[in-house]
Amino acid sequence: MSARNLDPHVMFIEMARHHRPKYHFEGRTPADHAAWRAAARPAVLACLGRFPEAVPANPELVVECTADGVRQQRWLLDVQAHMAASLLVNYPADLAAGERRPAIFCWHGHGPFGKEAVMGNRTTPALDANVRAHNYDYGWQMAKAGFITYAIDWIGAGERHPEHKPNSCNLAGGRDWCNLLYLNATMFGMTSISVNVQHGRAATDFVCTLPGVDGARLGVMGLSGGGTMTTWTAFCDERFRAAEVICYCDQWEAFGMRDLNYCGMQVAPGLYALVDLPDVLGLLAPIPLLVDIACRDTCFRIDTALPAFRQVERIYAAAGLQDRLELDLHPGEHAWGGNRSRAFFKRHLGR
Image (cartoon, rainbow, N blue to C red; front, side, top):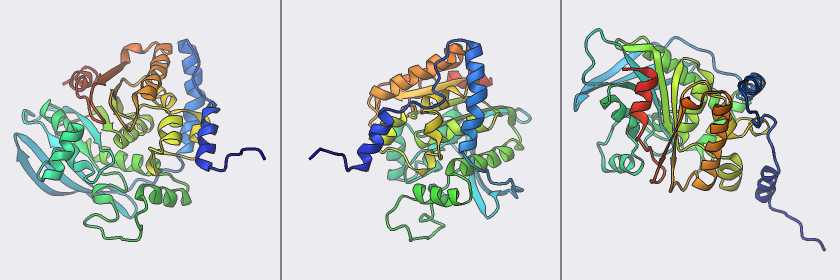
């Protein structure tokens, strides 16, 4: 009797090992890049499905306070029909009356606290440990560096997790809400990516109306799942002039199929048939891009993350834009390197 595989996990690993996406970039010249981008970008965008329709924000300022010189605001906004988001905004201490500064959208990753740790909330031992483990408070540190920063939770996280206060759903039975919400979105012809991108767009629309914000100088950054959202925010919203993807540069064959290190907030139907993740990052060109890779990352391992970056590097070089791509290769675990971020955003957004 022949030995045959009965394990579907192994089946998908082997499918990925033998797979070459339709729009895998192999060009060498700016003309090659332009033709590739013109063909691949609309096809990739179509995978994301329908985006929710915009609604009036109806903003409500919940509270404003100051900590260590940083002025912090919490707003409530409507981001689509039947859904709101809590928005945090950090203003640098030296922002003068009438002055306008660049603003950086700071997406959070997976974890129990959503945007709170990213924006500088260290009020409990658990929050403080979360920040220290991932150098996670880039929304706070970048405000201290002189930028206005802002953040919302993506669906299934923080205040927008169905089981977290003020919500109280207990129907998941231990299943991952990222996956459950993705299933719901696809039933409406959407994906979690398209929903979250639209909610981020609504938050950005409002932030651009705030005093002190220069809406022509926007950046976006995020760690892990926040790197996912940084990628797609920069891909879908052309207002962003610079992006930092932190610990989310890898190959779907490795972190997805092999390691199962992904979920419903990161995927779209047919996406891998068209491109691998390095190709998606390459499609961000001509946007200046800073990629953080951690040498000891156990989520996005260096043995496949670094080759993925080299593919992004080839794409930017073919486009003649190698000066717009940077790498922060740091010796830590799954965390923000923070070594090049301030200079990167100051160079591309100004101060």
